[in-house]
Length: 63
Image 1 (cartoon, rainbow, N blue to C red):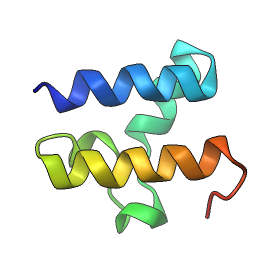
Image 2 (image 1 turned 45 degrees about the vertical axis):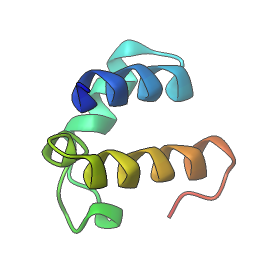
Image 3 (image 1 turned 135 degrees about the horizontal axis):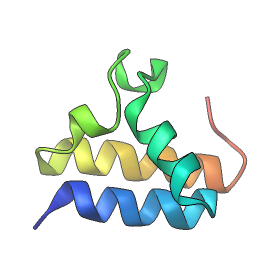
Image 4 (image 1 turned 135 degrees about the vertical axis):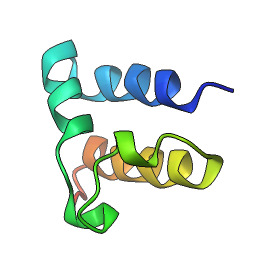
């Protein structure tokens, strides 16, 4: 599975905009230990962590 592509698709769906989702994916986040979502895109665990954060954002519970 290509985790990076799947994350980008989900981020674009949540943010509704390709540029906003790309910016969110590339910025370091406290929720990810000051790493970017793209840095977590290489394995299943990172993929799950990013998807959980996107779900929190989508439902208004982002940290």
